[in-house]
Length: 263
Ligand code: NDP
Image 1 (spheres, helix red, strand yellow):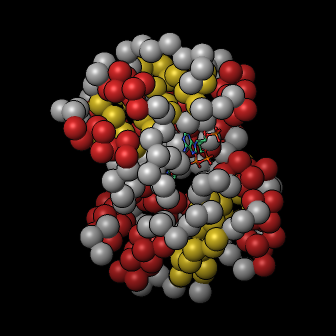
Image 2 (cartoon, helix red, strand yellow; image 1 turned 135 degrees about the horizontal axis):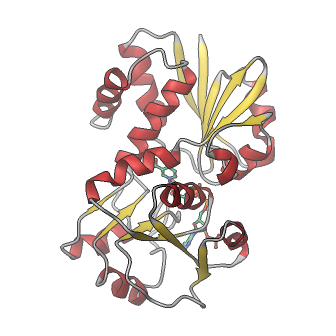
Image 3 (cartoon, rainbow, N blue to C red; image 1 turned 30 degrees about the vertical axis):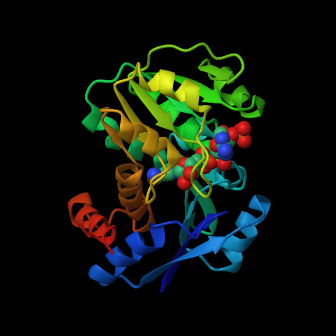
């Protein structure tokens, strides 16, 4: 039996085990997907091999640590320098990033988008900013602290902290911070958020499965919005393709995974 897991801290909220196990069961695949609370990101590779895993997903805050511990990184993950999917290939750890494509698929419903403001500067913000730029959408990154902005600046992207940010008009506001994940915090000060929402055409929170304070503020407006469920579903299908070497078509996997959201 193949064993997969999701590494994260926290990880108890993750829907990935249910999504993947539902597909394994429905299609009679001999595999099991667990969750692994990992305090030290530097231990990820050791734990992967100690558990005899065939593959894994990586969530907050270990995506950059996962990138650093791969034997080989493929595709957009090389530019992003953050890995959310690991596959064992000939005893080598191969890293991918499926967040980027998952997100681009999720925002299609907003219609044409020219520019976007990304709140947060972690692994997810990296993935989304590179994907947006590839999709000819200009991203701006806004983070509470400056430490993680270096990457974006080195990529030639607009990136600033709350202190040096000047309010502008953006077609889409995207929350990629973990504010609201296990607390009741907004990703940016409320007055700033209100001003940005009064000028935008839509908003998305990549957190899923709970109504974050960010989503609650958007609901008060008439703006189109969504949480991270569509992105989660799209990246889950892509992960399945990587784990099982494209054995099953998207049309087969996607409805089964979506169904698991109702359990
Ligand atoms: P990281 O830990 O890499 O980055 C977190 C970012 O959030 C940092 O920029 C950090 O700022 C900021 N932040 C954390 N807490 C606060 C706060 N209270 N107020 C303001 N900013 C804050 O996380 P990831 O990028 O890996 O993941 C971020 C979120 O995206 C998670 O909630 C995760 O669950 C979600 N996600 C959802 C996916 C989906 O499929 N729907 C896919 C991927 C991620 P600083 O630099 O100052 O510390």
